[in-house]
Length: 116
Length: 246
Image 1 (cartoon, chains in turn red, yellow):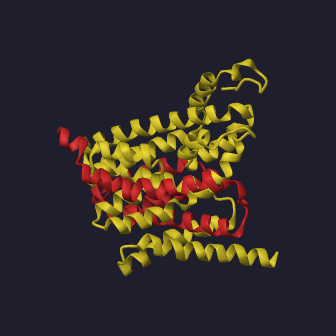
Image 2: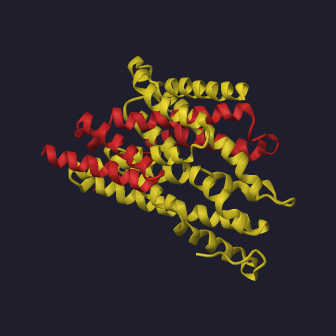
Image 3: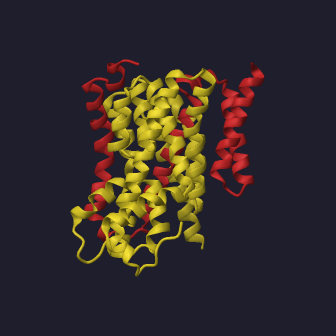
């Protein structure tokens, strides 16, 4: 791997700051600045948490539904099946994250191997 | 690992407390989950043609897995900076209530705001969960040093994972590369499901997954935002309806 590949260009790093670092730090610094006076159980924060959770859920769906890179080589049904199998095991093991992740991975790898 | 009792002289040195925080990363399964997630982020950055330095800077300065993934997938799929920035800004809103609820745990009457700066920066879902678990066992006046140690340890684990994931993606077979990329959605899905205590959280998570493919059909460039706002607001409606009936 070459040095330019590892370091990249300044333009990409600038994008990282504008679209990544600033949008995150704004909320943390607002929390640091105004945090004292807000009730954690307030209705507004319940809604904010629900929207934030749903956005995260959308991110999860996006990676599985419209995969990029090597994951795109896995057939649709196998990706959905892996998430489903992981979810079943997660629920059966009383919410073990580890068991769910391992089950999903094993399902995908076994399916890939079986399909050849 | 057992912490010293609250009145132990071991807590008198801030550096020693920092070391206790650092060591406590070995006491949680979430460290392993983070490792897997950041292995995936490193691989995703590679497959989306970002540099390794870029991936490491995003971990160091953004320090929020979902935001980093949104950033990589949106920028990588040709969205504009504005579209990415909006999606990331909205996803990061959840950091605000986390910071608001976690900082009072380590504040004393004499704490200055700048002393909490790193703790605020390090706050993300893992640190937030672990603070609620560990901090009651740490004397209040030493908690900031402890959190800085814990955060430093977690960031180091993730930077290592990023680097390994990046090189694995470059060198592995396609199947194993796919397995690494699959780690991220699986670990996010199950760790979020595990942290969902109220009905609103569960509805938001399930609907958020189900509505995304519909929103994606609209092709607005803000798909995640559209499905997230819709699913989150419906989840809030369910919460509100249950409160009214109760």
